[in-house]
Image (tube, rainbow, N blue to C red):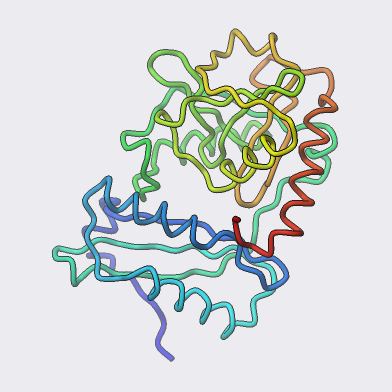
Length: 262
């Protein structure tokens, strides 16, 4: 068996001409594979990355990696790197250990910071992530879970690796979808919320308005729904009951879904 390698001289990789997705495998189940591959293809379209890999080819490869490595619990990183031609694009699947938030953050809420930055291609999950990496590094050095990215108009768009929400009563507020990367977990959380009597409002959110909400939370493949306790110096006193209920509803949904979005 040959090892997968990316030459250091690969200019497409070193210049960030590539896209990726992170999949969740829990108890041997690959979660929401179709949705992740749809977003992978959309990311390719946005940056003009042509490749010869069909959806069936990628699905078969992902399933083969899970079987061959007897994977029960892991994250899978799908990495698609462009080439000088469509035929020279490269495709990799990397099994990774999941990076779960600390258990106490689900009970008490996590802390995050804000950083001024907006990704150039907001609808594509690309390898051009230096500014996001630096913002995330700053957050971790401050003992925080993530950094929220503030655009040039002063609005909160998303985290470096999460989607951001606020909540008031049973109304969930999320930044407009055209301004951020619409996560697969975000989609499924909002579906569960709507099916259980929550209202969803898409609108801009500014840091100065945080006090008008009952609470806030993040979503991602690894964190699911993670309540937020503190944003910079602003702090919520409690995690609202409606948010705790949504967390339970989402866990139930994941257990019953079998990894497929119906």
